[in-house]
Length: 86
Image 1 (cartoon, helix red, strand yellow):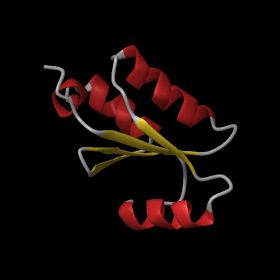
Image 2 (cartoon, one colour):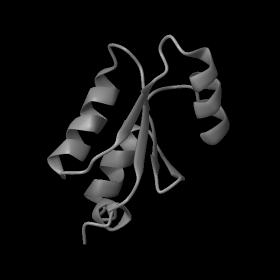
Image 3 (cartoon, one colour):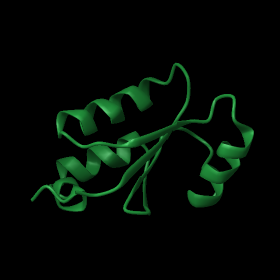
Image 4 (cartoon, one colour):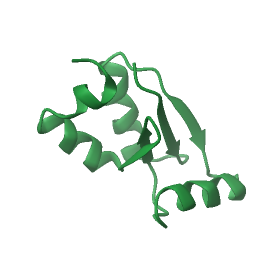
């Protein structure tokens, strides 16, 4: 199974939706809440090519984007392969 990391923020509906999809697929993930952690937000932005919105999602170290990007991968049938589910 893939290593999934998700940077989140407090009270973020998109973060909740992304985590819900990952949980539905039975995927474990590492969550880092950047709300009160400026150093972690900088880390996230560096890894995500300057993107500062949450969530930012990484699968096996590859930046896949945010919530909409995660759902688009699923809709296109590509998410399961990236997660090692197929």
